[in-house]
Length: 181
Image 1: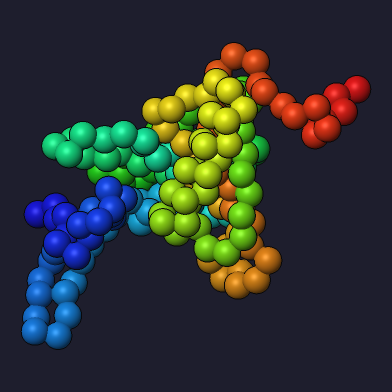
Image 2 (image 1 turned 90 degrees about the vertical axis):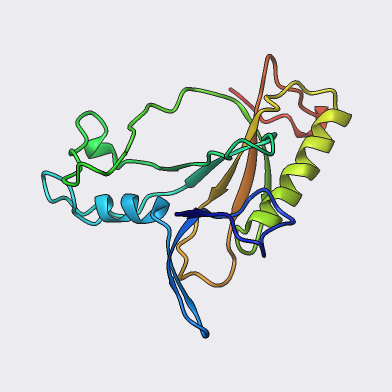
């Protein structure tokens, strides 16, 4: 059964899992959100293609979820350019992968180092949204993206971002406007 654990009571961002069994010393849990995608990019597709890892990895995080509604997070990997027109079909019919084109969009970005943990990402999303509100910037308040660029094996000099999608014209500070020739 899908569990929401008692120890994850202070956050709305808890990973859902199935409790397979429990002993006095440990529990066995199954969470398949990343596993399905990992198997697909590791060759579990009709062409047997093993995709090289691409960057960034995006997680769409809902901002406001009612207590009785499940939070739905969307995990996205960039498909290598050679497969974007015709992505191989997953071989497991229980795998629910959705291929979509990322629309052109402007995003407000806050960068940070370290690990892309939910509490860290939530803090940086909060700091970015406060800065945007102070600047009177218009942005989509329904969700934000957490964006990771590094392999889990990389320990130092990690780069992560949080994004809010711009609505209307972006608000830029005069001295930081990029040159767009």
